[in-house]
Image 1 (cartoon, rainbow, N blue to C red):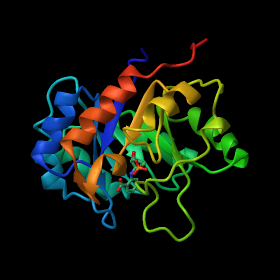
Image 2 (cartoon, rainbow, N blue to C red):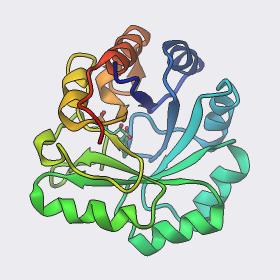
Image 3 (spheres, rainbow, N blue to C red):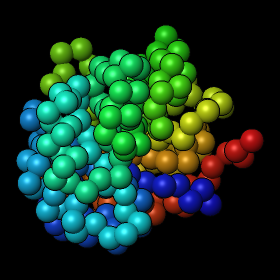
Length: 220
Ligand SMILES: O=C(O)c1ccccc1N[C@@H]1O[C@H](COP(=O)(O)O)[C@@H](O)[C@H]1O
């Protein structure tokens, strides 16, 4: 059994927080990106974050955030991590980490072998890496599109930092994804929704159980 740590991203309602905690997920993600169907106001995110029990880490997902937005979010919302999901440079990742004093997870989009060098670059500055599918050209959202990449690209890769697998994961494919990539952590948004932005408690429970029960390859 892999005992995979799960992040459920894009919670919008109190019952989502309860479902995520009950299922045994380890991270809850709150999205601050106006184009997303999961977008939250800072006040709404604060209310949800205050409901999270001890042991459920609260993650703010932001896309190329301004300093003012980060100030506003971090002053109001009790957080455990910042997820940078835009085109932030390595220098900006290091700056956010130093200035706001929270661990930073940097999302890196992967579509082909040419994207893998960026994983190495960002591992030098971020606390964690989120390996996601690259969004299609012209997509409104840089993530949360329900798209997977070819997991064989990262199978057997050696990592110098903790990382999470994301992109198009569902209760039906997460065990295969863990078995193929050896991911110790996985992240999902649209794969546990009944409609865009609407989380489904039964799907969340099924996803977490499948991820935790997956057979992982030996971690050397
Ligand atoms: O979920 C969103 O709306 C979102 C918006 C902007 C950037 C990232 C977003 N989500 C992240 O993308 C991954 C993959 O999503 P999915 O499971 O393929 O739908 C998700 O885990 C979030 O971290």
